[in-house]
Amino acid sequence: MSSRVMARPRARRRTPADTAPEAALFDAGFVRHLFNQLAPSYRWHQWMALGLTAAWRHQAAQLLPALPAAGTVVDLMCGGGELWPALRRRLGPGAQVQAVDFAGAMLAQAAQRRQQAVHANTTLHLADALRTPLPAAAADAVVCGYGLKTLDARQFLALAAEVRRLLRPGGTFVLLEFTLPRQGWRRWAFRQYLGSVLPLLTWLSRGRAALHRYLPFYAHSFANLDAVEGAFLAAGCAEVRQVPLLLGCATALVGRRGS
Image (cartoon, rainbow, N blue to C red; front, side):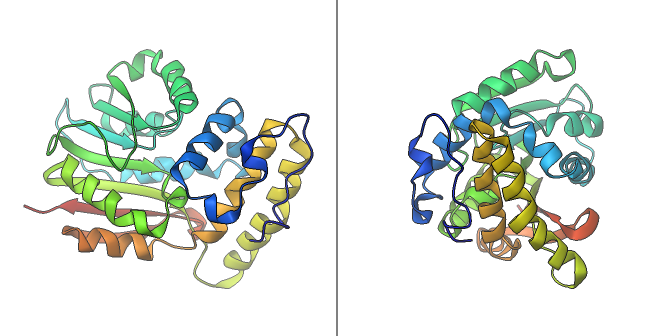
């Protein structure tokens, strides 16, 4: 989507994100800055997506196999911990969650969520998901909710290599992302929603919440998980497959580390 279509509404104070060219939108520094700014209003995206994001998180978590009672799950690009309720429903409170995000403000939101007793077995790490400080071959599962779209295609191989490094042999990954339906009326409807409804809602929201206008750009540029699937296959992962979720507007990439 062109920068003209995505033009930001006027606000009282401008930030570097206001004038960033499209080429910079996948730069790690820009993405970190953007999500630091988005953190206080990130809950807006749930109603902007008509509540479907929570349903997709639940579906993605259900794709995880049963883990040991105190199994370890790494949540990459964890944001404010929005995926944790679905993880806990699937895995129980005993699972050890290692949550990683490089946006400090988002991790502060996650720290507030961690105060709930059900999330007590959660450790936060301020780090890049492509280069985490976590030990190799120590995770039973790696998950990610809606972070893939902020990566440049050249970074998919780095992500795949890091996920494989983190997993124990036989460990599972489930990566969730918005996708465009492949064909039919749902593809047309979703494109209309991204191109018309979301920009209108974010224009009306003004202020920092209007920064959500960047999310449709990422969604438009990330039509499917084909390139990500190819990167994980190239990294030596096994049984890699795409699982369309409700309405086909989100997809989970599922696979495991081989021996």
